[in-house]
Amino acid sequence: MPVAPVKYTKTIQVMVTDTQSKTLDKMRDRNVKIPQFIRDAISEKIKRDYQELRPKPKEDCCPF
Image (tube, rainbow, N blue to C red; front, side, top):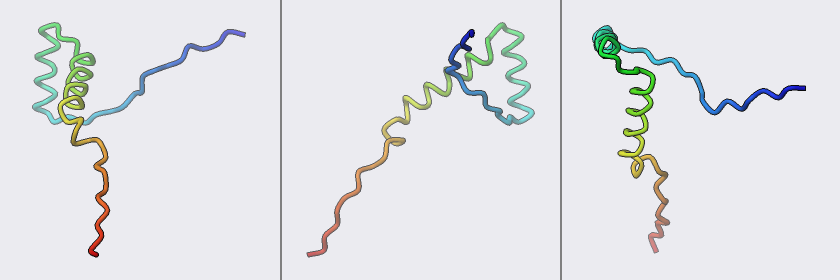
């Protein structure tokens, strides 16, 4: 029996405004790969905000 390959990606849908759609169309006309551009932008944002995304350790507050 053949085994299906493991899929490491998830598919999501993103809603964009009309202006954003027009900008993406212009980028597509300039041979920018839109899916890769979006993946790179998300990755950059996660790396930049990583410290804020990590759970903060709770401080034990003892009033005595």
